[in-house]
Length: 538
Image 1 (cartoon, rainbow, N blue to C red):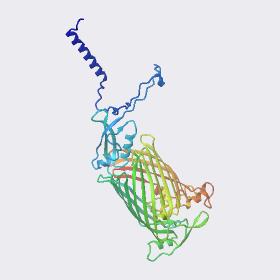
Image 2: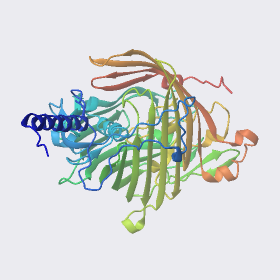
Image 3: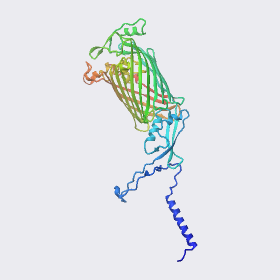
């Protein structure tokens, strides 16, 4: 038998080496584009790769040239290597990092909404003008780094600044009724020293009433998910009661000022003081929801009120319930609530949804002089129409069950834009509802059921990402409100019938809002219109 020559053996070895190199080239991964992260490769033995198998006739998809249906792409999964925070100069990095639920080693699927959810959560703190999340290629194939870039905003803001006029506490038919100026002011820093601590101060001042409140909030206690909420409030105020009241009152010589003058004017007025302490906790749930639980303790001093008083309610004369204990009393209540905020901007929103709901329970079991339950819910939805046009739809509903003091009941000035709204629960104006529909709402003042629906049109005049003035809107609002004692919804107020028995009224406002680096300011003209008899003397 002839043996193979040396040349033949060398030739055969070269051929085998060539085939081996070709096979290895076919199995090699293609070169990845720079900056892109590759999908995670399964590292656990027996785990199938996250790639859809090729379709077969058994899958119900036939290989037909006329059918050009694309299959959905397989989802991409990445292994998180790290989370990097960029752009923060004042805010502590660990505060922002705590808002990102991912840890190194977690698997991320960019097709899911989780990254958008985290962006909403960070934006909801109110500490930043801009929040951006992106994935950056990691050190190895299939690994990524989550980059959170923020642009900080000024967190020292004026939450409220109101100058206005209110009608003094004179009887309605007295043409010498005085107009009293007032100011309501609220200032807060939502991120003191970059630690996420919020401190605020509220003040209301007029010739006849004063009030102040300090608030403090800490985002996290001892690395827990729960924060601290607290406030301290004091009010020296008065409340107006009755429709054409008849009173019997003796003023103490050394008592409160203006008591004699109010008696001469035949007004039913309660003079009182409140000192309130609130302690509570809360935490974020998901990206857009915040839940909280507070305890509220109040010391109430009733300084003076009529010994006896009655009012005209429809075509009857009925006694006035002042809804407050004589002398000193206490309120001890727990409040449970949540806030859902999915607006695109906290200042001048153009889209999204805001929901606020609270329920308060006071009981003698907690040491309270009053037993009641109060529930409130407010919902606002923003719908963009075109580039500069937005519609805002709002709804409010509130109920009280039990014996609540009058400052826990609903006031007409809580609902209508034609009267100055309360500040620190202090009612600044004595006037009743404008009653543009001529209904039973004329006799409603402090009641246990309240509702309002309205629609607002916003037109954006100016928008900017930087500078002192960030936005300017013109707005027009139109709504319908209801205020009633629940009994009056079952049995009409005597003297009212048909549609007039339903205690509803019209409210509207026109003005402009501007967002600045120190807060959002609203200038409405409805309060001034409230001094005009809009019913034309009916």
